[in-house]
Amino acid sequence: PVFGTPGAASKLRAVDLAALLDRIAGDVAPEVGRGAVADYIPALARIEPRTFGMAVAEVDGSLHGTGDWRRPFSVQSMSKVFTLALVLSRGDSVWTRVGREPSGDPFNSLVQLEHEDGIPRNPFINAGALVVTDELARHGDAAGALLAFLREESGRPDIDVDPEVAASEAGHADRNRALSYFMASYGNMRHPVPSVLDQYVRQCSIAMSCADVARSALFLARHGIRNDGTRLLDLSAAKRINAVMLTCGTYDAAGEFAYRVGLPGKSGVGGGILAIVPGRCAVCVWSPGLDARGNSVAGVSALDRFTTLTGWSIF
Ligand code: DON
Image (cartoon, rainbow, N blue to C red; front, side, top):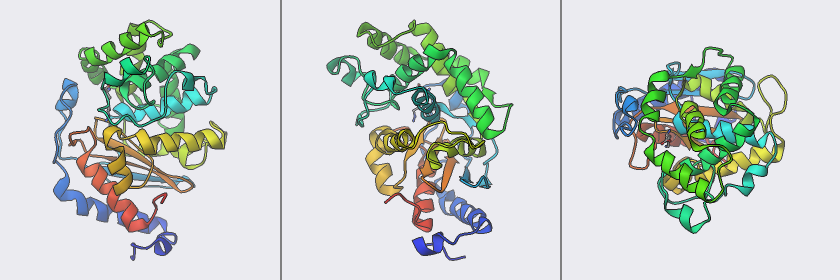
């Protein structure tokens, strides 16, 4: 099949997309295993780095994948997209507590909070995601609400928290604890820090496959419409989540990611990256070897190949 130009891409059929993903897996094979698995959460350090999976869910519901695309892994910070969506589905009060500018600093950095009154730069760095989880917890158990949503969207009632990863993360959460108490000192925590941390750790420790993540994120490709046809978000809220993913979803590498991939994206230290092609599809790629900024090495390359070969970038 001929990929390579936007014109050809728009005529890709389902069978071509499956072939394209296999081709990408071959292209990035030399990079699989490069980088380092996250080791500040000990349970993640035990993951075999030489794995690669990639799935594409199209807005019409069709699903394609390659490699380990049905194998569950720790979603980590990709969960932050979904908690933000759930919070915004209930109104936009969270924006008084968190900004929407890229931080240019590592995802777990403390430095900006002191100069900026305990208001995190954006909802995808750890400080901002803790605020989002705290805000979602106004309506009940945040991790529970997230799990219910992910199970419904993916059609997989067995999706759950990985208890080993959750225990490991909870035992090594000093940085997130510090961020939370620091924000609490500015009055930017509604609930007691231990309960927010507990929900945050559980949300990050959810295990899902590339297929599950891509299907669950289709509402962002469909401008707010869920898989059952109901609306989660209005058009404007869905657009804005994609915009914040583009500018902040890969932390201090967001500029490089926009340059190479050209799509809204959200990474996690489990090695997953979720990317959205608005109006067309949701893509999830997984390979655990991370670069220095916490983004999957082979994952970024695969998305780079994907947008180059299809022409499906937002630019
Ligand atoms: O809070 C943490 O540090 C992890 N649960 C999530 C961090 C993460 O995935 C950053 N992404 N690249």
